[in-house]
Length: 487
Image 1 (cartoon, rainbow, N blue to C red):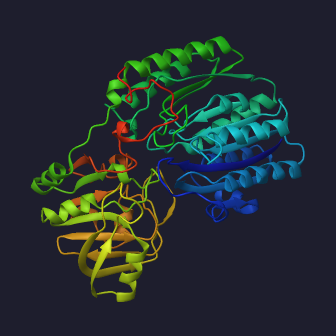
Image 2 (cartoon, helix red, strand yellow):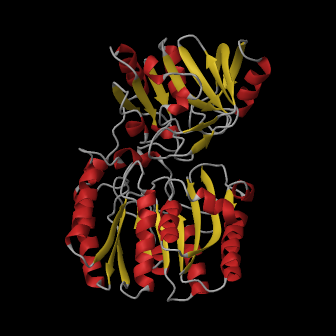
Image 3 (cartoon, helix red, strand yellow):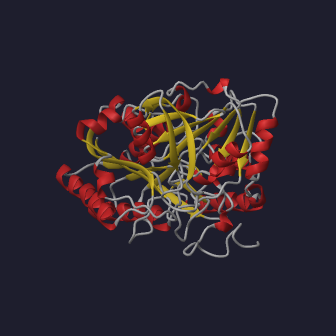
């Protein structure tokens, strides 16, 4: 078999002012042997290639576009990316199948559904018979166009996500079955009128998404005609009409069964809707509780300025409150401020500096505040995560640690996702030796610090990744929808 492989892995927060332009894509695009080498990691592409190599398939590398999380994609960036995919497919010649790793939340200035747009363009080039299979992140906002033009869509079944490799392997097995003529996938897509907060999409015992995912997978395992059942939580900060939870059921030429299962899971999700309501603590109360706690570390989640949700990362509200309440043994996981970083670097290790930090990109995440402290660490900002989920190398840009007495402040040049221990240890900060860890993360910190945290408190900070979705300026999403409407 001869198969083409690529990926379009970008998540968009449509509410932020920043744009993801062509320069961001050019610096984050893998092609040729580089793509195949990168495909030996923890991605869905890695899982697909593992199966393909084992079965001696010929691999045609397309491109893997991985700019991360940001604001709307510019018209130029999306169109250039799509054109490059099509040009590579034309140059490749006839293929027996195509596999794409997608995120499912790419939105451009001119296209609400970038993944659907790309799949439609590829389908037009490939024709109706060639298998076109895509994997999806668990936060994908699934659209009718995505379902129509892909042969199969397969979502991850964990959150935080650590089963990408397994999903890629599953995609390869399905493609093999399609090419052998033993599988004829038929899919049904359904949506409850529900947009869950990211905070409540944690898949762990006692959480609503774990209960629903278990139901979905039990239904999948019960009938051999079912190829896959994917329950996607959605990404509430990437606004399109279909933003929110969705179900995609794929059967072997049994469209009625697919529809029946999709509707059953959708009804179960709707019945659980109130369990997805956000639960956060006011800033002053959260900081006071952390200070008064007998044991540490206490993890304070700054959900609204999460490094995983496309916000600027320069929110200052938690830092200001920690200083106001004279917290000690506390660390702010990061304030993104490249100008302040450079000032600290110019001063040098051991020097005392006074800097105005944060609140410079917008006014949604707090005002700039002045802090004074000693420059304790200067680093390139590169580190490897210690978790099986969100695994890989992270690049925070030039990074410094400022020791402000009772509070240590990590200043980064790029938005960072402080969801696990190596974010701190890479900078010489041992998280278990601190009383308070304030982290910018919407959900992953619960798993990332589960082994060391004495308590995790999600804080009601302001920002464009707030779990209180009624605060966001939605304009395109279908209505009525819970919790934006009283249903």
